[in-house]
Image 1 (cartoon, rainbow, N blue to C red):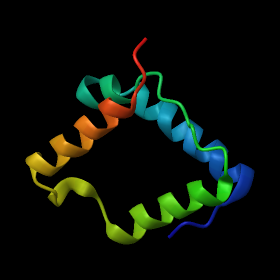
Image 2 (spheres, rainbow, N blue to C red):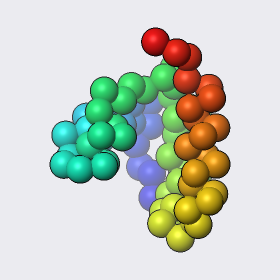
Image 3 (cartoon, one colour):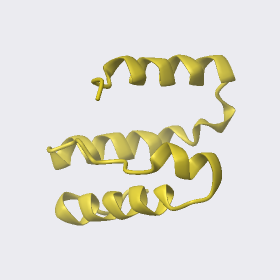
Length: 79
């Protein structure tokens, strides 16, 4: 259950991204230098609440995860 909101949730989310970025292996690679692009705390709370209520994505098939990843890549501006 999501108990934090506002600044406290944003700080926790930022720390979570930093911790994931320091993990070894693929997780660390994926989250290295990850940034919170959500400027509206209400939207962040909604997303976190949805993830909490829907459960982890571990049960999603590889094809679906691939489509999600490709969609994110398409929205990422080139460097």
